[in-house]
Image (cartoon, rainbow, N blue to C red; front, side, top):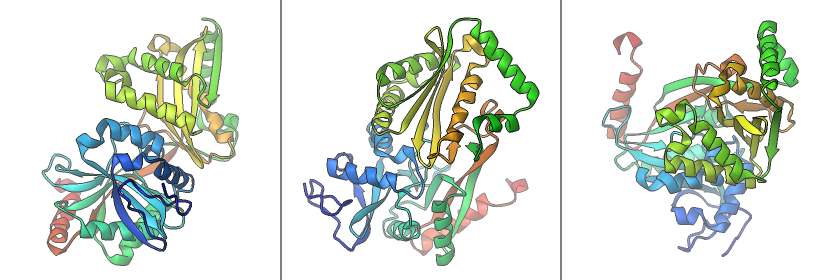
Length: 385
């Protein structure tokens, strides 16, 4: 296989980007899995303008294997000067919030929590210019482009708004949410003191002491792949034993989500992107947490706790240990991946990350005229809705 430059590749079909060129291409799952492309993809993730673990190979590939064909996902990759410089999965969707409106959308499933495309730092505006021109040429039946869960304060979103303003292309924010975020240049102890009252901190110490009376209590923090299969199975069992299992929403409740979790954690560990925390009582986990470490950020991906010990707040006690993220030199912020208003994490993580979902006009005049009507409908005064 011809590697060419550091981030170029040649697929089995013989296609390869020429030096000095830029452009958007669609790759099949088989092409995405080719070793040369995987190596370029991994390098792109390391130099991305914004980290997004859900679009890195160790997470996106298992996701595509589970649902990509069913959802009609097509992965668009972008080359600049013959080098891989951008990647995002896209699906054509026939319905939009219950309405029969065909559109193109960055693909996210129920266990993917960020939609920012991977793109090389410094090329953000060039990426958006080429990508939007690509959608104008190949809009198909899509009325517009939907970009869900974009970090609103990040450089990728800022570059997009700059490109949209410069071209006069219609767009609007269709939805936004603020979810708990951990940030600050301080110690874990100092952050806790500022985030929680003395009374609440005293109560947590009391719960920790009472829990320690139940048996040998220990915190565990693990990086790397050692014991990953056993840890993953333990997490799945712990989550399934609680209310999520009863509701049928636990990861282990369906083979596809269990497989995704198992493959993704193994892949993240092998890539050096995983941190595992556990609170153990007599060696048995009563609270567990998986973080994706994607410097300069981190994503608090999944957590579970034993509801038999709920009176001791084991999930919160484990989150106190998780404040050590603040003291890592390579991590400047952490995204909770939690819904806005989460009753536990927002008591501790006091910052917020604004996530915006945008709709953008594509195609020719008839399509843009229809988009203007949609924008007027969705942005009309709330009292008229």
